[in-house]
Image 1 (tube, rainbow over the protein chains, first blue to last red):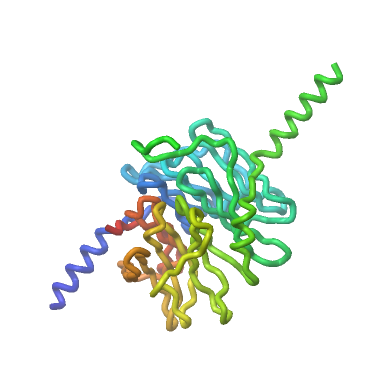
Image 2: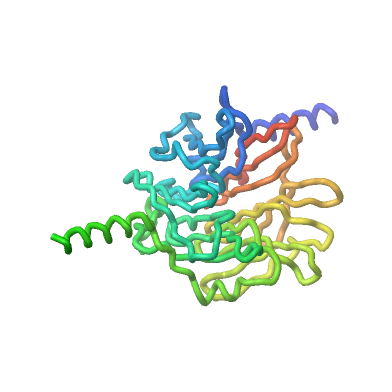
Length: 161
Length: 158
């Protein structure tokens, strides 16, 4: 009976993968692309909390151009293929929501209405909408936004909108 | 010449402002609740999040963008549990949840179509914190505390 339990535990352990690497401290705030091919998380690199994007099949870390500044990074979120990466970075004393288009390399600040500070983000799988936990007048609210002018990011074979 | 400089200035300024988000006005007023709303996660046609419940405790909520209405999540919310982190797949059919119950922190997978809750085991044992489902609902990433360190692991959830 005990052996059977051990076998089940071993099988379950085999079902999960961990993504540590030498020189990295704590890993937090994970997010996956649409089919789980890519994993993004916030890692501690010598006291700087930065995004780390990994291709899971190979374990290879993928480059994130233009993200060397603005730490600590927080709350990353990926679109379906991983083309778009939304996250929160620090700009001076204020947090700022930004969107990286990995296809073009363009990094754009996402301008929230004036009196709101971003606390957490979630990008819709097609990259057309964004849910934001905002801090406003001392209260945390949920607000949804449309991202105008972005090409939809769809799974392979999906019909165009 | 002055016009050219003015135009150049305007172009540069607009570039600095970045992408101007457009609020979903009709939806945001319906999502608004007194108290703190946390942990949003977007599906293709909806959103889940942790919102204040009627008796002051927090609960997981689902809002359907196609119908413009909230939807029930039977069997998911418990008055004695404190939800910590929530994530939904693209179809809005699977919801992953980390919650605190009876002094324990547990990781669950909820099927909205079947109204069923399935606990997910961490091996070796650890304390889950934040959870994220892939949009296809087949993979789950979770932030786990083990031995005083935060780790990230990914598991298949067939």
